[in-house]
Length: 409
Ligand code: LMR
Image 1: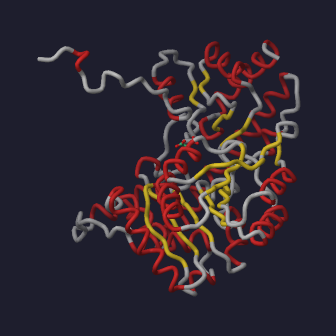
Image 2 (image 1 turned 60 degrees about the horizontal axis):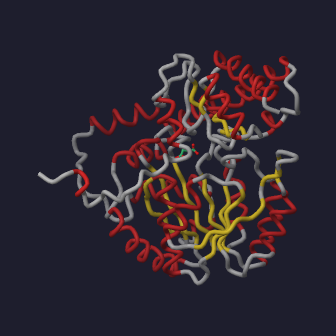
Image 3 (image 1 turned 135 degrees about the vertical axis):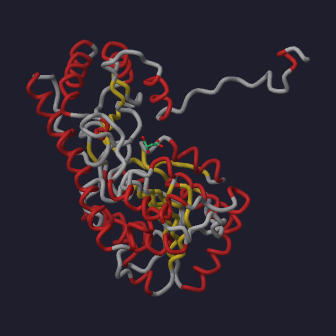
């Protein structure tokens, strides 16, 4: 038996918890019954419970009762039917890019896996290795792209003064980017700020990106979750596809189908022509095979079952809209509660921002006060997941915000 100090790993230092998922670890360790987790972006019901959509349960029943189904390996690129349906969902059923056969889609491990595979493909096969990400952005973005072999720079996005978009700053920074640079864009419901460009602003962004020969890489984690409409939330992406140019697209079904732990997503690359798309796909396989060989079958089968059946698709859109509407109603209720308390400051951004998150503007000290005194858990940047809130918990949150703002100005 060797002494513990003999470990080959004795020098390994303890890493910090993840800034988002670590909030859940801290929440789980808190024995106080009033605790509230507004950290991770995961939908909860009014009762504070995770939700499995009825349509998902139904799809699973269909899959389980089909005795012809087997557990063979999927191809490296995943379930072909899922890939086709995913491209149609984001680009539109009548997308010319799909009809012209210049889109290649591969099933990946949710949004993160799609971003990582896309990033590694670009690092291997694209001449420009700099990717511009918005400031701020989802905390995992810089890590994913750095480890994929790209060099990460930021463009201005959020204006803390207006708690809205710094549109001019964004345009200036993208104008100054080197020709060919990759630009990460949140398709809708920007995480963490909840601030999206208007359609007119998207059009100006598109013109700038195309005129400078920049390469757009869309991250779509919230299609249908922002407005309640799958088509409305895909408009930004479809503007870019309609001009015939190239782009990358990472899709996740974690939020909009509630398939978080199933890790279902897709990476699409829209190419100039079908010939290029075929070669690109052959190289994506070389990225995926040594990484995880091929993707899992169950989650993608659930998605395909729902997307290909008109009635199930319809049922999904209704359940999706109900989730989006509940989040919108939480915004209104929180805003009203804060107004009623007379909390100092302008809180209208709570109702102006869109999607799963409100970027409150609370600072790290105020956040840690709210966690300590009120057992409310959220990320240190002041982001709260509106999807984790319920009517019953609104007064508690409003009390905590009021105390944080008045005691720690
Ligand atoms: C979030 O931002 O909370 C979600 O996208 C979940 C995650 O993986 O970070």
